[in-house]
Image (cartoon, rainbow, N blue to C red):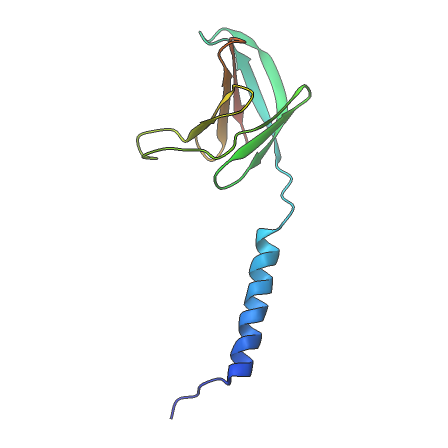
Length: 118
């Protein structure tokens, strides 16, 4: 005859699983330092900078010495064809190019910043 755990044992296992899942989802990931190239919209180099990139599943944040930016939810109708992107309230276009590359673009300032993370 097969063994069936008691309802009390199942409740304890479920509670332990929920606590473990909640702890994993609430970790304090502080991001990573990434190098970035600054250029104009036409591709003229304007220098390099380092910034902190915090990558989340559906968004990312950038912290530079003079700019803090949160992409908000990234959208793409088809991830195979279109780059997930969003427009921030400040007017930046934020794009996740790959798992290690991010771009922010500000057309009125004629500025593109491409981040490459290790």
